[in-house]
Length: 341
Image 1 (cartoon, rainbow, N blue to C red):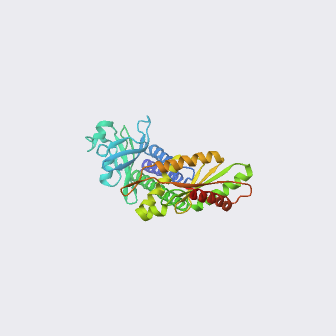
Image 2 (cartoon, one colour):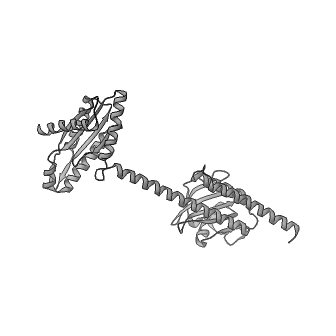
Image 3 (cartoon, rainbow, N blue to C red):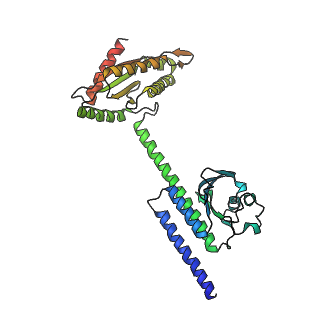
């Protein structure tokens, strides 16, 4: 090998090492989110390969969709979609490996529709593997021919795509973990049948609101509601009818509630509504609307149309109240309401 050839090889090696160092920094940085990481990889690739266009795509069946792109004229934007067969990525997916064309006009793929439509003379792309499947491709291209891609070029773009695939997998795992955490949180605070908050969550809210009411001398009212003749509904029409009645209350109360209200399934057919900074008059008006809406709702059990009714008890927070004393007072009021019909 001549001195000039040695010098050229050393320059290529140095450039590759610098690119690898920058790639490592991009992948390991804690300050970049996924989109910023992809953008940095695309810009690094365009600089290293001397190709002005970088694209990260997602491929679903026969559709090629741009996820992120670097383009000197911003002509490619996320969401743009093409038929896979009309892109150079079709060769990549078919080969299941890196494909590179340094001068398409003098190659076997010069009749390809992508060349005919976009006149991209140079292209270097690799499949992005995620969990044993190809998510899409990572590619770099340009309108002018370039020198023949070297073995280090091919290995480098393959590494780019591999690390990008790992980043996608990590993001998917994180999303799955976040979703699982939210589901655990939901299950721990929600009643599974109605979707309303459960008794434990409401007790925590009551403690917090009672404390706030005492500190800031605010009003606080709770409403305890109980379906009338609920056992008879279950006995006559089955437990599905009872479950549907509970779901009806949940839907209607959720539609009418204010942002500050908290509604929970308190017992079997009992519901508790926490109404912060609300006086008796406002609470009564709201609860009347709620019970009217439930009674007037179209509710059917078997072939029968039924009008459901609720008994309501109001508890108005007083100095020295605990959760138990406040709820007990609402319970007494509800019992009196039920006895009065």
